[in-house]
Length: 222
Length: 308
Image (cartoon, rainbow over all chains, first blue to last red; front, side):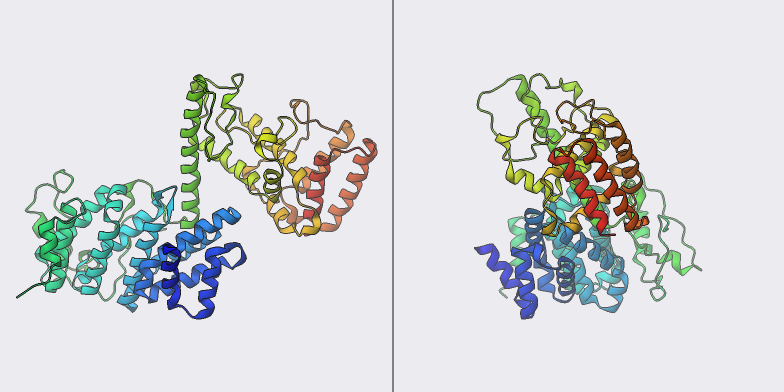
């Protein structure tokens, strides 16, 4: 099955014992320590940028498996509370390591994307996600390409959903991005390009026109 | 607790020149209107002496005023769970209203929906409520749903639904989940829940299966269960009550009221004594004939206290 092999590919970044733990959690969640599983996943997400963008899928599978098997939500509760701790400590994390910080944002957004409640995004995460994006839109963050890149990546992925949940905050966020693009002098040219692209992307209804697509994503021939 | 406009936390990050907020307010003063169309007032005057004001970075950018009450004290696990109960209740209400409408226009081949079947009795024309008689207060529905969830989240319920498929369930004999969408008084509803749960205990797993942990969890019900524990049987003809003696009833009431909510404060020895006596008394009065569900109930309480 395509989905399960995708998950298996993602967990290859773990050591064998942890891989076994995760595989069991996916199939037989009642038999493992789900708190431990959630910690393992969060820890890895903060280290491994690729994993942080994929972990949401794994988490969703475990949540569903647990609900079906035991009607419980131990895993989801542990995951969310751990995530909340990390979120509260985000400023220290950012100071300590930009890489960890962008992994954290990427992970929170990935969870927001995948862990739906009755097919609706979790309302509890809307403000935290916006908080992260607003932080990335501050001047000291915009001058780091790594942070701008993270910001636009998240907006590409979940911008339209976030906007539906709260239009006013999205408008405010984009005001900051516009201002940054126009006024901030210490942006790298790549940073500026990324901002311009996301401005056009949202203006186009969370999609790029064909010409814009060509502009931003075609190979430059000269 | 944090105030809405959060405290400044950056010792290092005090660079007014680079502060884009300053630049933003310069720029935004050229714009008369904000993004939402309202006229902009000039930004708060910056006090040059106070570094914290000019490069203020709030702990949260999504201040409460903009979104209504946002509690930062709750944990996300609880919040999401509450969301889930609420959205489940809304979904159930939607389905129930549809079923009520269908009941007005009965069809022979009714599609069985896969969702919760708590409120399946809309077909019964005697019981079918007029549209105005549906309980629609969300807080009430959520409270009732939580009480139902407590009952369904038991081994007894699992065993019951596995053992007795829906088409074999007989009203009066088999426990039936109370319908949260019907109008009942609080007292009436709580009584129905109590009786339903008592009936379910007939399907408690036997003690050898190591069900102790689950039994203990059943005790910790908090305010939601609001147990008065008057084991009266007059109102409900559907659940036959075996206890005919007033004396044993009174004794049961006393013991249960003392023991039930706060078992941890009572030593297990005294409880064991009470229960031995209680069981003797019950069996004595009723000549040894006990329908299994009553025995099941006392069995449940007894085994639970064994573990304290």
